[in-house]
Image (cartoon, rainbow, N blue to C red):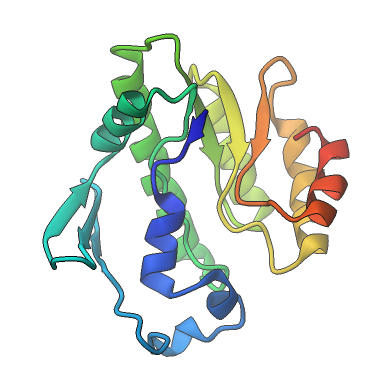
Amino acid sequence: LITDSGGFQIFSLAYNTVHDELNMKARAKKPREGHKPTTLKVTEEGVLFQSYKDGKKILLTPETTVAAQKAYGADIIIPLDELPPYHIDKEALFRSVMLTHRWEARSLREHLADPRKQAMYGVIHGGIDRELREMSAKYLTALPFDGYAVGGSLGKDRDELIEVLDFMMPMLPEDKPNHLLGIADPESILRAVPHGV
């Protein structure tokens, strides 16, 4: 069983849908009809949500997401990360990658305090920016994660996804498992697998 911390949900709650964001619809800051964004604040501490059910405020932190995934009995735990939109400037993307690194380090510390025969994968970020992806890979592969996942924005189409994998996969250790997050359509999977995910 592989579980995720909610990074993608943070993204979708803040920016409507991936489709809307990639088509720049979310840039206008207009929620889709019937949608009220529930992500209130992203900070160093974590992410503050407002429940769509009762309006209650909920703080999601790296530590609470690890605790929840351990309670589910996950075999592989994905730490809390921020998934910024595809259309983001490099400075904002850099800040997001750095925040994600700090959250992942906190998640790993929490996990290693009580491993329970569970694994945790570090999530490599940086959008489609080679320099940021390389920085993320170097930082995270220096930490004792059990495996690695390629996450974050992976491009606007399959061709960009494959370009990211072309330059990204040689940066990851061959002696640990590598996983591709968020990709489920058969054609993308068939094109991605030869790259080692």
